[in-house]
Length: 282
Ligand code: C2E
Ligand code: CA
Ligand code: CA
Image 1 (cartoon, rainbow, N blue to C red):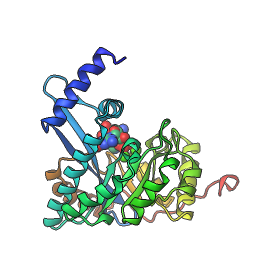
Image 2 (tube, helix red, strand yellow):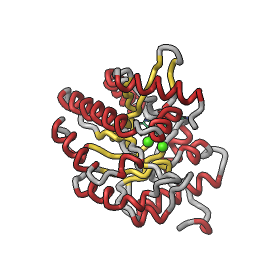
Image 3 (cartoon, rainbow, N blue to C red):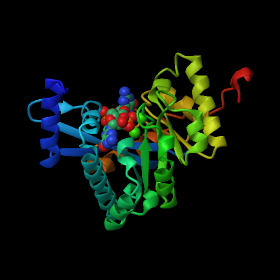
C-alpha cells in the first residue's frame, strides 16, 4: 500500500511531468590533465509551487515504483539532446551524460529508441554517455544484451556510484562499460582517511588497466582535486568545479573556470605522484 505522503508526491510529480513543469540542469565535468570541459551530467529538477524543490532522490524511486520512469526518461533524454543541439549550434562541443534507471533498460528496443532520438535531434551517438547504477532488484549483468546494443551504436556507458552499494569488480570485467564514476563517499574522506586514498588510487589504476576512463564525483575541495590529479584520475565533477547549472549559465561558468584553471589555483606546481604503501599496490 502506498503511504499518503507518497501519494501526494506521486500525484504532484505526475502533474509536473504532464504539464512540463520539470526542468534539467547540467553539471560540468572537467579533465584533470588540462582543465577542459569534458562532459555535462544532465540532472532533473522539480520545483513544486507548494512543496518547493523536491530532490530527485525522492521522486525518481517513486516514478520507478509507479510506472512513470519511462516517461521521465524519454522527456529528460529528449530535453538533454535538444540542449546539446542548441549548444552545438552555438559552437560548444561537449558530451552529455544522462542517468538511466535500470528499469528503462529492460526493454530490448530501448537502444533503438535512443538512437532514433539522437538521429532526430542530429546528435552523434558518441556524444551521449548513459550513467547506470547497479541496483538490488535489477542486476546489470542481466541487461548485457541491451548494454551491448548501446555500445554497438557508439553510445558510452558509465558505471555510476562505483565502490558503494551493489557495484562489483566482476561487472567491470563482464559488462561493456567505457567509464566508471568513483562514488563521492570515497572522495569526501580523501583528506582524513588513508583507506579512502588507497581505495581511490587503486580503483584508478585498476580501471585504467581495463581501459576505462575514471571520473571522481563530489569533489568539493582543492585538496581532493590535487590528490585525484596526483593519482591520474581522468575527470573531476563536484561543487568545487561547478554546481549543476541552468543551460544558459554554462558559458559564464566556462569563462570563469578557464580563468580559475589558468591561474593555477588548483594544481599549482608540478603534481607529483604520492607513493602508495607497497603492500596495497595492485
Ligand atoms: P547521481 O547520478 O550520483 O548524481 C550526482 C548527485 O550529486 C546530484 O544530486 C548532484 O547535484 C550531487 N552533487 C554533485 N556534486 C556534488 C558535490 O560536490 N557534493 C555533493 N554533496 N553533492 C554533489 P541530485 O541532482 O540531487 O541527484 C541525485 C540522484 O538522482 C542522482 O545521483 C541520480 O541517481 C538521480 N537522478 C538525477 N537526475 C536524474 C534523471 O534525470 N533520471 C534518473 N533516472 N535519475 C536521476
Ligand atoms: Ca550520475
Ligand atoms: Ca553518482
